[in-house]
Image 1: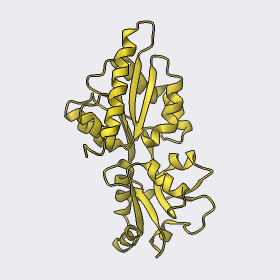
Image 2: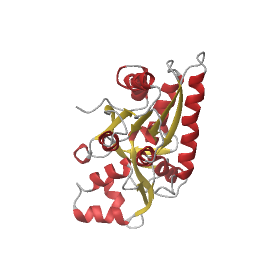
Image 3: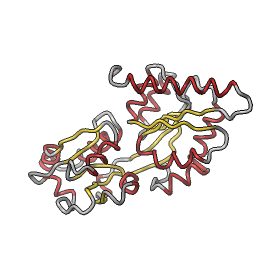
Length: 254
């Protein structure tokens, strides 16, 4: 694991250094580094552009990789995850403040635009169908496996036998679909909406849906705690929440 994320660690450390440089000039807004799940890219990019308390620098990757970076000493100001487990883990270890749940999402099956090979969940179990899913350690992969666990064993086994790609984040699954490398993939509805011209969404039964909750936390050691708290606060009640809704996210689950 450490070797796999070394390049990302180096970039994140440079970003952290930039925070200190920005803070030295009192006439400049502070630089806020936000590490966030890939599925948040559309919403947070729009939100960050209008965030006035600081200049926001965004870093997107799989939530598990970002959490691992923080465990190894990288210090963004905010960590926004596609689950609640990873921020809670960092909180327990003293590496982040108490996390806040700020959004929900749901899984769908996505297929390349114009494809008719897969029209339903049942089609995923047919011989010859190829599927991409998230890796077990990344939230979208964990959610997918929870959903599949609710299926009859024979159907679940047939679907898993058709999996040809296990991706490090949801962006990788979307990439396989848009490249035409697979016939279908499990992604969030928000990712299908962001790629509506390239993929088609197939809804899944509500009875199979896992609870997909997003949480964010201020990372311990942040030099810009007020701005970090304001950024998270905006995801709950301000412009950030509006951007989340426009991207297709749902309110936090109760």
